[in-house]
Amino acid sequence: MLKVVFFGTPQFAVPYLEALLNHPDIEVLGVVTQPDKRRGRGSQLIPSAVKKVAIAHDLPVWQPKRIKKDPETLAILKNLQADVFAVVAYGQLLSPQILQMPRLGCVNGHGSLLPKYRGAAPIQWSLVQGETVTGMTTMLMDEGMDTGAMLLKAETPIDLWDNAHDLAVKLATSGAALLTETLIQLAQGNVTPIPQESDQATYAPLIQKEDFQLDWQKGAIALHNQVRGFYPNCLTTCRDKPLKVLETIPLVPECFAQYPAAYEPLKEFVGNTGKVGEIVAIAKKFGPIIQTGDGLLLLKQVQPSGKKPQSGWDMVNGMRLTIGESLG
Image (tube, rainbow, N blue to C red):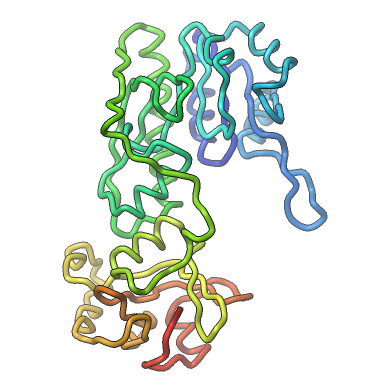
């Protein structure tokens, strides 16, 4: 039996923990996750998604505020004598002391094909950069930020209509199987760690509020990728009020091959032009079409300030939008 301690926090990490729990050759000794957070009305303490699963399986749970500086947790982890620590979206850096505790080291599941997109937000930035393929990499952790030697990889194609949520679900599914396979292969001595080529590395930094702002001077495809990558947070203004843009369709010939049949009628709008940020046309049953710095972008789903998400077509009718109005 391979003895594993799992480190993870958000929903993204849950399929990984479940895959380990369901494997006949793996014993999960316990779970390390972030402390409960106060959320919502009445500031109730809400446990992490990973903690909920751990409790449902009667696993011990440790929630140090700062794991590097928590002697009690460190002593417990050392005494467990685990074979390996499996780490997925835990949310704290591990000290050299922790990295050296398990016999086989600490294995991390990272949401990119390393050394591309090292850092906190690989899924989001791979979409923003317009990648058509991404994947999961398992690696032996070292002290750097996603710099450890790589173990196994699994590729996942990115669809033009995938947003950050869709892609996270895809990667969590493939990544969970990959992590389990990695741990078993590592225990059997069947996987050779491959050092990363650091000169090939790209970065996926923490997302800032200003990343959400849509600049209509950008091209339609770049804006579409920004909306997908930072879903559901991208913002513009409409009649001087904030407007969240949740889903878009770039009306650009290079995207036509990926149009589903329902989008075919939109091709006829391609000849329309106007000032940057201007509504140049309204597509019936779809929504407003905006002139960008390069090409047209249809707003398929939006969320006006103080309202629930709605289709672009409902916004057109609710606000009585007209051609010639501007956004941003």
